[in-house]
Amino acid sequence: MVRDKISKKNIEEKFGVPADFYPDVSFALSPEKVLFDLPKKFVTLTIRYNSTDDIESIKKWVIKIQKFAKNNNVEVIYLPFDKSDKLFMESIGIEITEDYQEIYWHPNEVKYIISKADIVFSIGRFHPIVFSLSTGVTSYYIQTQECNYTYLTNPQFLEGLLFDFPNEKEL
Image 1 (cartoon, rainbow, N blue to C red):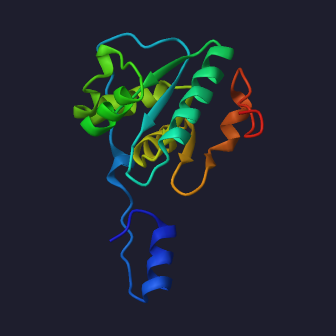
Image 2 (image 1 turned 60 degrees about the horizontal axis):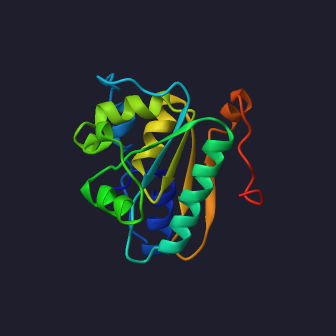
Image 3 (image 1 turned 120 degrees about the horizontal axis):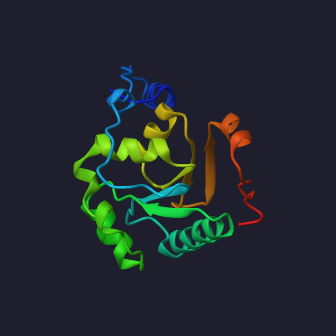
């Protein structure tokens, strides 16, 4: 069983076995309004650390995203998707606001926060991208294992932003 058609194709070609495709149920998750105020303009950042990740590369991306946010007068909301995300973010010096400390216990609220973001950044996490795709928010997936590259989703929404996202060379 796979969550996306690219994985289905890869498994079938690489291993020669059929793979059943079931879309991720997170696409259908209903956003629930949070009980605290969100900033007027903000981006979200989620980080999932794996032992094969380049920690220095992750730190550089965090700095680039923070600089981008500051230059465009938007806040960064750090969204841990589980306790290990939270502990890793704290270990590299990220201070997670109290409202978001254990937000991962409330996926409907996480989806709501993401639905209100200007841009979603995810380093190594799949579901922030699912949440952003299903709510029409531009998202960037940043891969730090073995190489650095980004996947841009929903490029048509970039045109409607009040600020321009820098290309990789500017980061």
